Length: 126
Image (tube, rainbow, N blue to C red; front, side, top):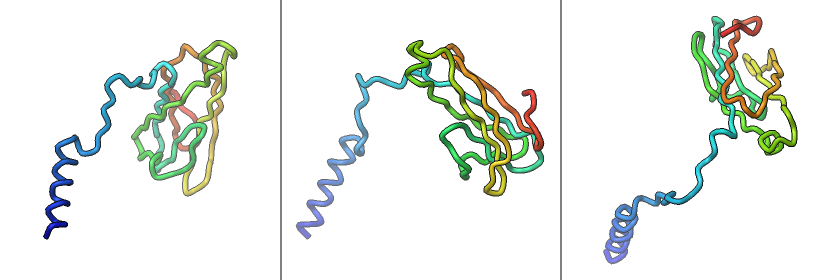
């Protein structure tokens, strides 16, 4: 019974102190200018996986027909510092565990958003 009392007291202390949440006051937040938001739209009639460089086919990037998803591409430090003028991000399309298309896009530091569409056989204008 004594152990149960100790457990209850510890649980109450844990809950009353914020359930283990970290205090983020004063911590730096990610600089959104270091990312390019890429919107990927599925204009095809089938579920389609849509992802960018560094990713792979997964349930998280499956987009239903008529749907869209957003992926965030992190610009390199060299691009943001001006050491390089541009870099390439790849956009991938896949179905049934296979990659079926890839588009390589040159990006620049001042860019913040990109949009791409897929119609089932090729890239589309948004």
